[in-house]
Length: 450
Image 1: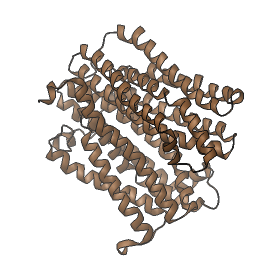
Image 2 (image 1 turned 45 degrees about the vertical axis):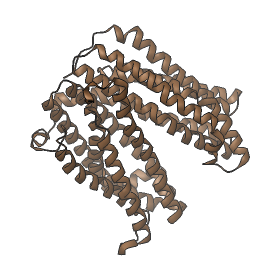
Image 3 (image 1 turned 90 degrees about the vertical axis):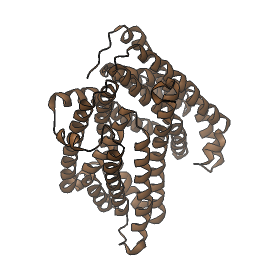
């Protein structure tokens, strides 16, 4: 059957599966990399890598924001069959990301030690953390380009190519990291630097692969002469991309900071509570991946419908996203409840901590479905160019509900109160987004941005 006449739910599912697998693989690659470093080198090396994590989260948050703004415009341009506009958006976004990467690389080359001092790197890992951070930051120009391309390909409905790129990048890392740690194939043993070099090798191989693969497939985002012509900064277009994308990046930063606050609350209950917190979040992250993927799919399909001036299809996209979230996320939640003890045992061996973790997981699991509903509403509104207020509502659910609730309820209910705070935050997210969607946004006239 022609792809264009497939039912929306089928197109949703075909888009969703590679996207969800990409998210899961990304998480697994980080876990495996940590195992390599911790087991083959030691705790100090693992600590050195962990010191760079906050910097990486901040940089990725900003680039994800830039990519999401570009993806919305590319989605609308793809719906309008405006290939020239796709090249313009791609060219401007890639140019800006590469230039930003050069700035970050320069900062890393000259100020890596200062950054580690600001982050409070312990004396015993300071040198390792500085060397690791310097190499990682120097590699940012290429990584930013890799991140932008693989993220924005989704705007033209392509989630398979980013999945292939990620598999290739991870595959390179899984070979290069232990090879440089152990000195395989006659390579030098470079300790913790192996992870940084493998990281750069991974995206470098992928960028070469994408150059040939996208041209071979005649992708609208192929790095051909048409794209080369637009490798410059179109400032009016950049302003629109940032307007659409920066709120998403800011939302990620706020969520990251709130996570640090929540960890501080949990730590007051002792190491068992901290271990339980880590295990619960590991399980929740894998259950939330489909919900987050559904929201990305809703945003792209809504953007394509708006670009094609099929405004009546936007409601269908919202409805399909909500149904998909009910079925997919809901099914995962049921499975997690049924096998909660087995899931927890993957991370924890102590019987008492297992029991504690399982009880906390039972408190919060159901709210993952609620979280998914809220993100679908915000994603569809974001596709139309309405980004600021949905972002502020999402931040309000964290800052005005989750953190205060966790602080207050942890004092009255103990540790379970922290997870009740999560459920209240997810519920408030849904209520706020749905009220704005039905009460205000749906009454506005939708206008294409390209």
